[in-house]
Image 1: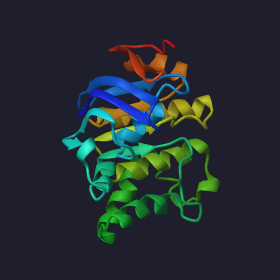
Image 2: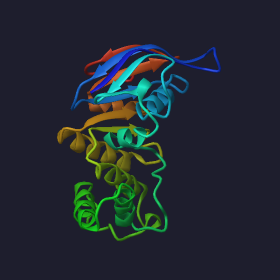
Image 3: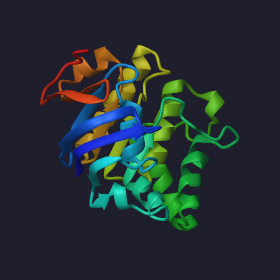
Image 4: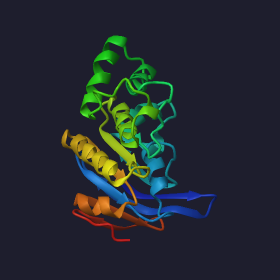
Length: 226
């Protein structure tokens, strides 16, 4: 599903962001990617979604070779690798449902399909009773649920969550992690990028640890070590 082979990324000639990273994530896994600020997590995320190309090595994601992917292919890659962030990125003048519908409109789906798919994913994330509210009318956790629903409309193979609980309190954070575990149970591969030690240690799932651009630990049932 995701295969990094001796991947390095340099900036400005000699700034090393990643140094010889290799790992394989199988379909259906739930993996936490951890490390301190500057460890290389952000660079790795950019590589996963095609924003960056590796300086050395190869990256294969569900049959896509990132080093050779064209600009025209990147949008299709990003529908298979759905990404959510800590700042939600919702359109404030659209309801929660309209935010989800808009993602389908952008990729040219018919109104018939939009009106079928969007309410379905809102039910999956538990927002069927709030989908006609606006982002400012709901909690941060509910805004993040909407962002997740928006990512699910493409039926992605991979959900890449980049610090998804960074702006949430502990209760809402737990609900978001529980939702990602639910999505993972459907067969979607989940990659959680986080610095939240408590969340990682409670998950008892695979943990990949980066430090100063290098992979220093890969534990099948891991903890946040650094």
